[in-house]
Image (cartoon, rainbow, N blue to C red; front, side):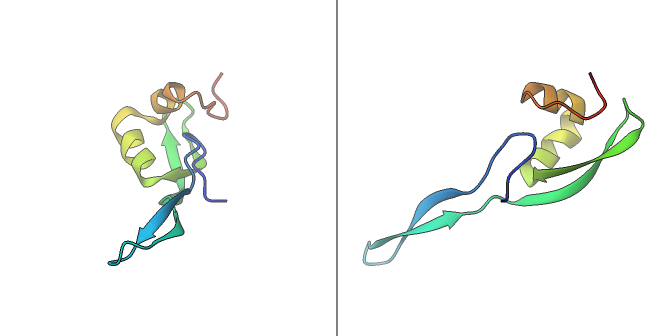
Length: 78
């Protein structure tokens, strides 16, 4: 299943609306990527499945701070 390890975001159900306003159910998928993220506190890479929005926030805040904000335990950090 496409799901972010940190935030837990996954696909949502929505409607496709035609020109005649007929609604049909469809899935809105999350833009999930498998990434190796460098953690300076550990001195190594950690493999995660994260959304592209998570990647931008990790670049800005750092993995440990971002994970702590969302209640995610980074492997190797107490």
